[in-house]
Amino acid sequence: MKAAGSTPNPTASIPPLRLVLVGAAAADAAASVEDAASRLAALIGVSALPPLVAASTDGSDVAVDVLMAELSGRGGSWLVPLPQDPGRLQPWGGRWSELLGAWRQPTVLLIEAPQADEGLPAACTALLQCCGVPLLGLIQWGGLFDREARRRDGLPWLGVLAQGDSADADADLALCLRRRWSQIAAEAN
View (cartoon, helix red, strand yellow):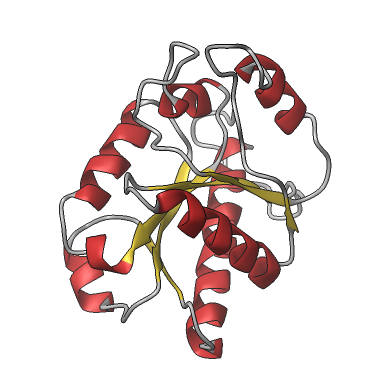
């Protein structure tokens, strides 16, 4: 934690980029989040990890505390998709939003293009912020990105991850995400 009145050290190294990509609640969000995570990881040059899967009621999967400890201890830069609604009560008795906040896990929120003008982006942003999740921002998945409308809604939009070939949009998104990561890293020092 930095002292009051101190300035960030410009020579301090920026920590590796380690992100969870969370999808807003949608019936088909799981496949979209996994597809977008692969594409985003390639775009920003980090390792794409398998999706986060927590313990089920029968205990067949990994317990969440073990899962998060393994994730936080993992080296290098990486991105992992969370193909589940972050606000939904899970069989293990908690919510992903609470867990990500408790572990202070930097997160990016994926919003499907048709959802961008609805209330879902604001609701999911508020949920993650309320739970103390370090939210880098929102990424629109596909569609035409209306920068002016996104600016008016007051949410921390990073840009659009095009589902087709869009080199300019991809470059803008990668730059915005890296800038935001640098800001968060500097605030943490």
